[in-house]
Length: 271
Image 1: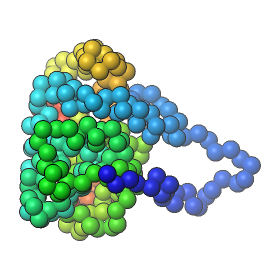
Image 2: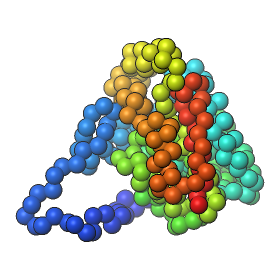
Image 3: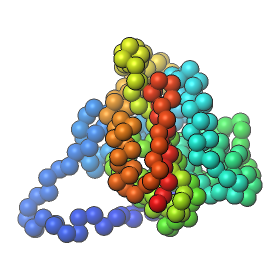
């Protein structure tokens, strides 16, 4: 597994630095419904996924009644990948999307799973279906806000159920835009809010009461599966995310609701 230099940083705030002697006000960012110091977000997110890594795939299947496999297949199909494409799976975790993409790009293509959490990637290596043996799928550990690849080398970049966990979501999308070739495809699969009011109320009850209980029973952590629905509620609605992607520089931004809006796929192209 390739390791990433975490000391790499963007040059932010070069202009307008505060005069010496004045303390910088502490920035806060969302962590579920909480606001926490910006500097703590990455560490707390790492600890969260370390807690759930070994049961991550099992819990996804249990909590979604297996529907997440259909969502992922639909999302990858919408990218219209070609044989020979080079694809990066940002926040790729245990690699479900990467496995599907690998089948599309065939032996002449390449898929890279890129994730900051080593335990999540290690959990993905134990799956029975192992395209990793053919050497087309590689694992790289690194921060999605500071992707350790040069500009314009990927034909496609995808992220599934991971972008909302970044400290700065816009930075993650900006990095995906940077590493894509002109005309390259970006796909984001993420949870959202059901569109039908009655269904939304049922889903809220399931999310805030049943999911934490199942998390406590099967993973030993109610907190981990309380954070999940909270972070979903804080995520932008499809129209808001479309506006953000256009602002970053993507074009032809489209989205598709899945299962009454529980999940949404956004697909866009680098101008």
